[in-house]
Length: 267
Image 1 (spheres, rainbow, N blue to C red):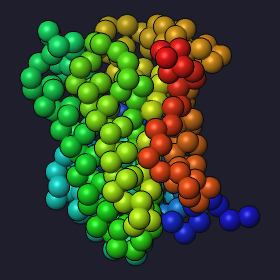
Image 2: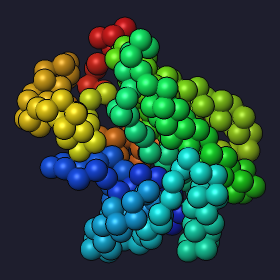
Image 3: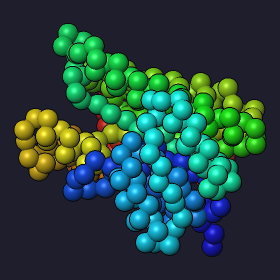
C-alpha cells in the first residue's frame, strides 16, 4: 500500500528542534511525512539541527535535505522554495511550524517592546513570508496544501501577549489564505495545539522558571482533561499528515484543535 504522501514534495520549517528529552513537532512531522512517502526539505535556522533530522530520515530509508533558513527573511523563504524545486522538482505541501516565545514576553503591563516585535516577526510575519513564497508555486500548478501550526494561546491566556496575539494572527492568516486560494486548488488549514510534551515547551519553561522538567511536566499534565496527560509531537504530526494528504481534500480554512479537550473546557 502506498504511503499517504507518496511522491509529494514537502517543506517543513522548524524541522530541527530544541535539545531535550522528547521529540519536537517539526522533527516528528518530518519523520512521519517521510515514512508516508514524502520527500522533505527540512528547514531550520540552526542547520545542524535540520541535518540531524535528515540523518534520522535517511536512516529509515527516506529522502530529505537540510536547508538553513530564517523565515523572518523573505530571501530565505524564497530560497527554501527554490531548494524544493532544485532537489525534488517542485513543491506540494508546506508545513509552517516555526514558532518562538519567551524572552521578554508577558502581560500588557510588563511586556518588552523588543519581545513583541521579535515574536510577531517570526510567528506571524515569518509565516506570511513563507506562505507567500510557497504560493508562487502552488497557485501556478493549481494544487497544494499548507498546514500552519497554531496554539490554543490564540483564544486563551493572559501572560504571553505577543505569543497569544501572534497565534491569533496565525488563525486569521490561515482562513484568509484558504479563502483567497480555494479556486486555485490550494488548501490552507491550521492545527491549534494544546499542551504538548516537547523540548521547546517543557525544557524551555523549566529553564525560564528554574524548575525541574518533571515539575513542569506534572503541572501541565494536570491541566489536560483527556487522560490528565499532555500530547506528544506525534499527535501534532498525525494531525498535520491528515491535513496535508488527499484524505482532507475537501477541508480548507479549518482550525483543528489538538489539545486533549482543553479548548472545550475554555468554551
